[in-house]
Amino acid sequence: MTDSKRKIIVAVAGASGSVYAQKLIASLSALKPAPAEIAVVFSETAREIWEAEIGGRFEPVPPAKIYENENFLAPFASGSSTFDTMIICPSSMGTLGRIANGVSDDLICRAADVMLKERRRLIIVPRETPYNLIHIRNMETLTLAGAVICPATPSFYSKPKAIDDLVMTVVDRVITLAGFEGDSYHWMEDD
Image 1 (cartoon, rainbow, N blue to C red):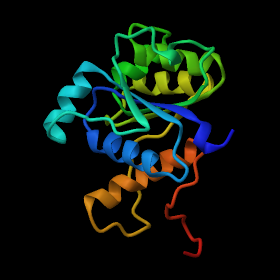
Image 2: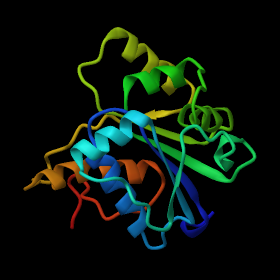
Image 3: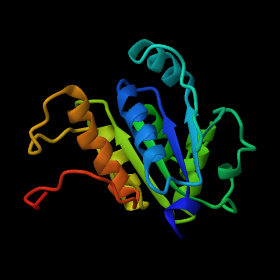
Image 4: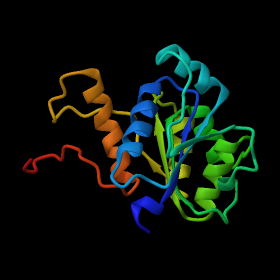
């Protein structure tokens, strides 16, 4: 499937780190070619955190399209949909725990369950720290079920100069994990 036909989901759960979601959605939208659709879903808490951290509400720009977290009629709530990748960025440990335990009480958790049951890509970007044993076991469960856990841990070997540069080290890694070719720094490779 070419990138221009891919449909992906970006879920924003209630953890601090809205800037990761903001940069991820913008970077995916700017890919050449961009995905056919970027379905965006916010938890209620994520909306509040976005407004506090970013200022204002999220305004989708095509190919991004927003879906309400209570909308179980969204196309990607079913395994028959053609959405092939879901990224939860940032993810709270509550969302991660509900997914790990099969609790599909909202669209984010249901879509994640669909990704796992259909053996599609599910990338979860937890932002909370430190981890307790419950968090670690939930991450283990999800990893064994096929998800990729990619903590929002910036790297420094590219010599970032600003906060946005640090944020992009995580975003670029997530884009690569999602199977897109980005323009990111690669350790010990020629520019």
